[in-house]
Every structure is written in structure tokens, then in C-alpha cells.
Amino acid sequence: MRNVLAIAGREVRAYFASPIAYFVVGLFALLFGWFFSTILAFFADRSMQMGQFGGGAVNVNQMMIRPLMLNASVVILFFLPMITMRTFAEEKRSGTYELLLTSPVTDAQIVLGKFLGALALYALMLLVSLLSVALLFLYGNPEWKPVATSYLGLLLMGGSFISLGLFFSSLTRNQIVAVVLTFATLLMLWVINWAADSAGPAMRTVLNALSITDHFDDFSKGVIDTKHLVYYLSFITFGLFLTAKSVDSERWRG
Amino acid sequence: MPRQHRSPDPVAPAGRSNGVVTVIEVQHVTKHYGRVTAVDDVSFRVERGEILGFLGPNGAGKTTTMRILTGYMPPTQGKALVAGFDVLEQPLEAKRRTGYLPESPPLYPEMTVRQYLGFVAKLKGVAAAERKKRVAWAMERTRVADVADRHCGKLSKGYRQRVGLAQAIMHNPDVLILDEPTAGLDPKQILETRDLIKGLAGEHTVILSTHILPEVAQTCQRVVIINKGRVVAVDTPDNLTARLKGAETMYLQVDAGGADAAAALRQVPGVIRVQAADTRNGVAGYEVESERGRDVRRQLAGAVVGQGWGLLELRPLRMSLEEIFLQLTTEESSQEVPRA
Image (cartoon, rainbow over all chains, first blue to last red; front, top):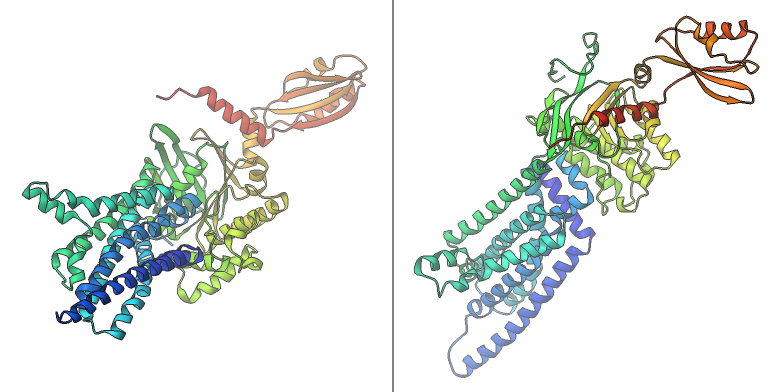
């Protein structure tokens, strides 16, 4: 565990030593804020209308927080590959990979350390976005539980993105290749169920089950379904397992 | 002390009963990259406290052998042991006892030297309480303390190399493996680095690779010459010089007043061959080969003076390491069988 934390700590330090962390966190906050203000304007409009026609109060969780979280999930799909692209590729290019692989640490510790490092930066991104959400609590009274499950869902989904990004970064010494592969695969996993409507019933279930963003929907509604937990946790485990195998196999390939 | 691996050694059966401990043992290691054979059946051993020079032209398989020893990559065949631990079977134990400086020092440019060495200490398993002390010790030992708070990416080549060395000795390993530690340094830095390495031997066992011959003669106690992935010789630099000359060769310059001194020189007992080397202003130079281990200098001098000639010069011709190296590596390539 000490080795894992040492590697994770170095990762986080590297993010902040370069402009990566500031750009990623800052721009994510900017985009999140933009979504927040536009959805808020729309929501205020709707509430006013509902008030005028006597339709009762509008659910702030349903009308405000849920769309916000769905938008955020798309934004992180664009952002996380940029966090993970350097993890292995850069070390291979600069030669520091040799230090890691000849130190008394296991492949699993290296992979886990890098995963936790990237996850920490991602958690910081989410933390900054909480500022906007906090405003809703200040001036309204949304339920906190769906907010908590949304953030749990975002963390799990982001973890899946990160584990995939680590794997692609471990395959190459070229960061651009790593980011393109990660991005394309994530995009594919996002839209894979678009073919579900025209597919047969068996295929439809499979395609829907594969879609990486579809599993997030229930979280944003405030539901924690074991099905989705299992999906994300197995996705993360499988991604990390593949990465560890890729690290190991590269030694054999030389 | 970990268990020592003992097995018949095909290379140098050094006297190991009298307290000599083998720290590194490479047994029939072969490494293929696809269809290319980088290392072909390499075997050697290194005793504790020794500095072993790993000599060979570029692309001979030095780096590959070192990477196998450090556990960076596994051999296709064969076995490598560090301090008694198989680098494949017990990689963590072996790595704990190995310090490695790759050809380009593995520095993180965004970290300061102190941060970097602190990270390395953690990674190498130095206990938290000792970490600060070890970092300071390593910096002092490699004389990088004056750049402790500079970023690794901003260091000069000499400092980068030394920080790399500090990284390698951080956990006080039994074995130090240094891949071309003086490459790219200026002459003063080369001398400093060599002194540093010599100072490290004794407590550590050192393998260093180089393609610079004088470096081996000056730093190493034993040399492994490797060419095209194969070991072509293992010996001390002095023995190599002697062993490779089947015979001793002298150079004589004789002022014989125009006469040919070769016949007279041939008469000297123990002389195998006399060859005229050069002639300058009536002074002839000869290369005289004698039986090995027989010193014929007195007799040669006597023969020349006895004829009433002037003996202007008499010196043994020693083969330089360069010549040995060339001889060995070209011999090898002429025997080379084309590989499928």
C-alpha cells in the first residue's frame, strides 16, 4: 500500500507541476458553471410558468440537478482521456519507466497507484463542481440523496473512463495515440445502444447493457441499482487488470 | 546473508572457497527480440566488492544483459541471480538488492532533486524514519547537494548523471548496475564519476558497461567483452593483454652500419621470429618475437653489443586493450555463422 500511495502521490504532483491539472479542473468548472446557469435560467422560467398557471412547485431534483449531471457525464467523457493519456506513455518516452519497473514494486502496485492518482484529480474536478450545486441548497431545498447518488455515479463512471485510459496509455509511448484510442472507445461505448432500436430483442438487451453512460441514468435519479454498481466496478477491475497484463506483457515483448 | 547459489560455472572458476562470495551470476542467458538474437548464451559471475567492466561495441547486447539483471525484462532462456535471488522467480527480493542507472537517467523533470530522491527512497522501500537521512547521504555522496532544490529537468548532463547515480545507491543495494555511466560527460566529469564508482566498490558490487576502452583499464578489476550478443572473453585487463599474445614481442632499433642484424638476432635462444619493421637513416628497427614467459631482453642486448653495433632502443611491444578488443571482436565475426 505504501508503494501504491508513493506512486499515486507522484502522479498527483506531476498533474499539478504541469498545466494539466489547472486546465482540466478550471475548464471543467467553467463548462459545469455554464450548464448550471443555462439550466437554472430554463428552470426559473418553467417554475414561473407553473406558478402562473397554478401547476404547483417544480421538482428541482428532476428538472435541474438531473439534466445537469447528465451533461456533466458527457463533459468528463471528453476530459478524462486527457488526464490519463500521459500516465504510461510519458514514462515510457522519458525513460522513467525503467525506474518503476526495476524498483521493488509489483505491476499491480504501479497500475493501482496511477489509477488512484488520476482518480484523485478527477475527484477534485467533481469537488469544484459542488460549488454550483451548493448554491441550489442555499436558495432552494433540493433533496440531498439524489445529489449524493449522482456524484457516486459520476465517480464510478469516471473511474471506468480512467481505467480504460490507463490501458490505452500502457499500450503506447505516444500520448496522442493513447488519447485518440481512449476517446474513440469511450464514444463507441456511449453510442453503442443507438443501434438497439433496430436490433433484435436479444441483441437489444446486450447493446443497452454495454452502454457506459446509460448505466449512469439511474444514479442521477437517486437510485442505486446493484446492476449498475456491478457494471462500473467490473469495468474498472477489468480495465486495471488489462493494464497490469499490458505492463507485464511488454517486458516479454521487449 | 541470503542463500548463495552454487553451480558449475563455465567461464571463470575463480577460487571461491576462501571467502569469495558470488553476488551476481548469469547462467546461459539468451534473449530474442522477435527473430533478432540480442544476447546469446551469456554466462559470467561477479564476486562481492568487484567492479566488472562490460565492454562491447554499440548494439553488442550490453544494455539487454543489464536490463535482464535488473528485472526490467526477462531472458528468453537461462537464469540470472542477484545476491542469490533469481530475478525471475523472486523479482522483488532481487530488485531490493539492486541499484540501476539506465543509459539515460530516469529523472522526472518536474520534480526537484530532493523531491525526486525522496520518491525514489519511498519506492525502494527505505523506512520513513530514515528517508531524509538516506536522501541527504546519497546527495552528499554523489555531490549533488548544491542542486537539491533545482528541478531535474533543468540540470546539466553531468548533474543528471550524478542524480541518477544517487538514485541507484539510495537503498544501499548490494549490486550496482550502471549503463554507460560516463557517456556524454566532459573529461573532468568523467574522472569524477570514475572516482565515485571506485569509491562505491567494496561496499557494493558494480557492473558498468562502456564502449570506451581506457575506462575499463582504469576502473575495472575484471572485464567481460561481449560482441554480437556473445561473451568473447572474461578476464582481468592485464591477463587479457597477456593471454592474447601467444608470444612476447620486443621492438629493437639497431645501428648496424648498414648490415642486416636480423640473422644475428635469430641466433639468440628463445627467439621465434624476427621481422624488419622500419629503416630510418641506416638505423633498422626489428620486431622480435620470443617464447612466452621467457625474457630475452638481456640476450638480445648482448648479441647486438657483441657485434659492435649500437643498440638504440629496446622495448616490449604490448598490445593495447584497443588491439585486443579489435582482435577479439573481429575474430568472432569471422567465425560467425549466418543465422536463420
